[in-house]
Image (spheres, one colour):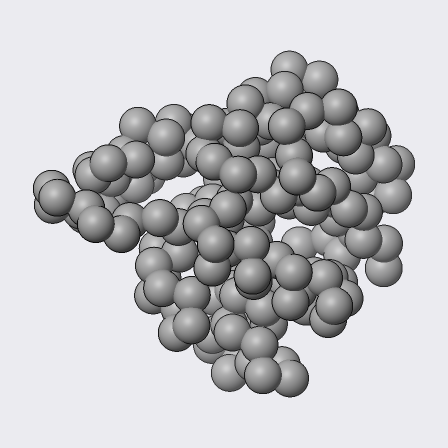
Length: 171
Protein backbone atom coordinates (compact mmCIF):
# COMPACT_ATOMS: atom_id res chain seq x y z
CA UNK A 1 0.00 0.00 0.00
CA UNK A 2 1.31 3.44 -0.97
CA UNK A 3 1.27 6.01 1.83
CA UNK A 4 -1.18 8.84 1.25
CA UNK A 5 1.16 11.70 2.20
CA UNK A 6 3.31 12.87 -0.65
CA UNK A 7 5.57 15.56 -1.97
CA UNK A 8 5.30 16.01 -5.75
CA UNK A 9 7.90 17.87 -7.79
CA UNK A 10 7.56 18.67 -11.50
CA UNK A 11 10.66 18.76 -13.69
CA UNK A 12 11.18 20.05 -17.22
CA UNK A 13 13.44 17.19 -18.29
CA UNK A 14 14.71 13.78 -17.30
CA UNK A 15 18.16 15.04 -16.29
CA UNK A 16 16.64 17.32 -13.64
CA UNK A 17 14.38 14.52 -12.38
CA UNK A 18 17.26 12.05 -12.17
CA UNK A 19 19.44 14.57 -10.32
CA UNK A 20 16.60 15.15 -7.83
CA UNK A 21 16.33 11.39 -7.20
CA UNK A 22 20.06 11.22 -6.57
CA UNK A 23 19.89 14.21 -4.17
CA UNK A 24 17.12 12.53 -2.17
CA UNK A 25 19.04 9.25 -2.00
CA UNK A 26 22.17 11.11 -0.88
CA UNK A 27 20.11 12.68 1.93
CA UNK A 28 19.08 9.22 3.14
CA UNK A 29 15.62 8.87 1.61
CA UNK A 30 14.38 5.33 1.06
CA UNK A 31 14.38 4.48 -2.68
CA UNK A 32 11.31 2.34 -2.01
CA UNK A 33 9.33 5.52 -1.28
CA UNK A 34 10.19 7.36 -4.50
CA UNK A 35 8.12 7.27 -7.69
CA UNK A 36 8.76 8.93 -11.03
CA UNK A 37 6.41 9.39 -13.97
CA UNK A 38 7.32 10.55 -17.46
CA UNK A 39 6.89 10.05 -21.15
CA UNK A 40 8.49 11.43 -24.24
CA UNK A 41 9.04 8.75 -26.85
CA UNK A 42 7.73 10.82 -29.75
CA UNK A 43 9.66 10.90 -33.00
CA UNK A 44 11.83 7.97 -31.95
CA UNK A 45 13.95 6.87 -34.89
CA UNK A 46 15.20 3.63 -33.34
CA UNK A 47 13.32 0.67 -31.92
CA UNK A 48 11.82 1.10 -28.49
CA UNK A 49 11.25 -1.88 -26.28
CA UNK A 50 11.02 -3.26 -22.80
CA UNK A 51 11.83 -6.71 -21.60
CA UNK A 52 12.29 -8.48 -18.33
CA UNK A 53 15.49 -10.34 -17.48
CA UNK A 54 14.85 -12.08 -14.21
CA UNK A 55 14.13 -9.37 -11.67
CA UNK A 56 15.30 -6.45 -13.86
CA UNK A 57 13.37 -4.58 -16.51
CA UNK A 58 15.44 -3.57 -19.54
CA UNK A 59 14.76 -0.71 -21.96
CA UNK A 60 16.28 0.43 -25.19
CA UNK A 61 15.57 3.65 -27.09
CA UNK A 62 16.50 7.32 -26.88
CA UNK A 63 16.12 7.58 -23.09
CA UNK A 64 17.17 4.04 -22.26
CA UNK A 65 20.08 5.07 -20.06
CA UNK A 66 17.84 7.39 -18.03
CA UNK A 67 15.08 4.85 -17.39
CA UNK A 68 17.53 1.98 -16.98
CA UNK A 69 19.39 3.96 -14.32
CA UNK A 70 16.20 4.82 -12.46
CA UNK A 71 14.96 1.22 -12.61
CA UNK A 72 18.20 0.24 -10.94
CA UNK A 73 17.49 2.73 -8.12
CA UNK A 74 13.72 2.58 -7.68
CA UNK A 75 11.46 -0.38 -6.94
CA UNK A 76 8.96 -1.47 -9.59
CA UNK A 77 8.59 -0.21 -13.13
CA UNK A 78 5.84 -0.17 -15.72
CA UNK A 79 5.11 1.08 -19.21
CA UNK A 80 1.51 1.92 -20.13
CA UNK A 81 -0.31 3.50 -23.02
CA UNK A 82 -2.73 5.87 -21.29
CA UNK A 83 -5.47 7.38 -23.48
CA UNK A 84 -5.07 11.15 -23.53
CA UNK A 85 -1.49 10.96 -22.28
CA UNK A 86 0.20 8.46 -24.59
CA UNK A 87 3.12 6.28 -23.57
CA UNK A 88 3.79 6.70 -19.85
CA UNK A 89 6.62 5.11 -17.88
CA UNK A 90 6.36 4.85 -14.11
CA UNK A 91 8.90 3.63 -11.57
CA UNK A 92 8.36 3.21 -7.84
CA UNK A 93 5.38 2.58 -5.55
CA UNK A 94 2.95 4.51 -7.79
CA UNK A 95 3.05 1.48 -10.14
CA UNK A 96 0.99 -0.55 -7.66
CA UNK A 97 -1.57 2.27 -7.30
CA UNK A 98 -1.90 2.50 -11.08
CA UNK A 99 -2.30 -1.27 -11.46
CA UNK A 100 -4.93 -1.26 -8.69
CA UNK A 101 -6.79 1.52 -10.51
CA UNK A 102 -6.66 -0.50 -13.73
CA UNK A 103 -7.77 -3.75 -12.13
CA UNK A 104 -10.56 -2.10 -10.17
CA UNK A 105 -11.63 0.13 -13.06
CA UNK A 106 -11.40 2.96 -10.53
CA UNK A 107 -11.24 5.84 -12.99
CA UNK A 108 -12.36 8.86 -11.01
CA UNK A 109 -14.21 11.93 -12.24
CA UNK A 110 -13.04 11.87 -15.85
CA UNK A 111 -9.36 11.45 -14.99
CA UNK A 112 -7.08 9.11 -16.82
CA UNK A 113 -5.99 5.94 -15.06
CA UNK A 114 -2.87 7.88 -13.98
CA UNK A 115 -5.15 10.51 -12.44
CA UNK A 116 -7.10 7.79 -10.66
CA UNK A 117 -3.85 6.36 -9.28
CA UNK A 118 -2.79 9.82 -8.06
CA UNK A 119 -6.21 10.31 -6.47
CA UNK A 120 -5.93 6.95 -4.71
CA UNK A 121 -2.74 8.11 -2.96
CA UNK A 122 -4.37 11.30 -1.68
CA UNK A 123 -3.58 13.84 -4.41
CA UNK A 124 -6.45 16.37 -4.64
CA UNK A 125 -8.40 16.78 -7.89
CA UNK A 126 -7.10 20.26 -8.74
CA UNK A 127 -3.50 19.06 -8.41
CA UNK A 128 -4.20 15.97 -10.54
CA UNK A 129 -5.30 18.23 -13.39
CA UNK A 130 -1.98 20.13 -13.07
CA UNK A 131 0.06 16.92 -12.97
CA UNK A 132 -1.72 15.33 -15.93
CA UNK A 133 -1.12 18.56 -17.91
CA UNK A 134 2.56 18.41 -16.94
CA UNK A 135 2.85 14.82 -18.21
CA UNK A 136 1.06 15.77 -21.45
CA UNK A 137 3.68 18.53 -21.86
CA UNK A 138 6.52 16.00 -21.52
CA UNK A 139 7.49 16.99 -17.99
CA UNK A 140 8.40 14.52 -15.24
CA UNK A 141 6.80 13.98 -11.84
CA UNK A 142 8.89 12.89 -8.87
CA UNK A 143 6.77 11.73 -5.93
CA UNK A 144 8.09 11.11 -2.44
CA UNK A 145 5.70 8.94 -0.39
CA UNK A 146 5.87 8.88 3.40
CA UNK A 147 4.74 10.26 6.71
CA UNK A 148 4.31 13.99 7.22
CA UNK A 149 7.87 14.50 8.43
CA UNK A 150 9.35 12.64 5.46
CA UNK A 151 7.41 14.57 2.85
CA UNK A 152 8.16 17.90 4.54
CA UNK A 153 11.87 17.03 4.57
CA UNK A 154 11.63 16.01 0.89
CA UNK A 155 10.01 19.36 0.11
CA UNK A 156 12.96 21.14 1.73
CA UNK A 157 15.44 19.14 -0.37
CA UNK A 158 13.53 19.51 -3.66
CA UNK A 159 12.46 23.16 -3.31
CA UNK A 160 16.09 24.25 -3.56
CA UNK A 161 16.62 22.56 -6.94
CA UNK A 162 15.40 22.84 -10.53
CA UNK A 163 11.77 21.86 -9.97
CA UNK A 164 9.16 24.06 -11.59
CA UNK A 165 6.69 23.13 -8.82
CA UNK A 166 7.08 21.34 -5.47
CA UNK A 167 3.90 20.64 -3.48
CA UNK A 168 3.13 18.67 -0.32
CA UNK A 169 -0.12 16.70 -0.15
CA UNK A 170 -1.14 15.47 3.32
CA UNK A 171 -4.00 13.04 3.92
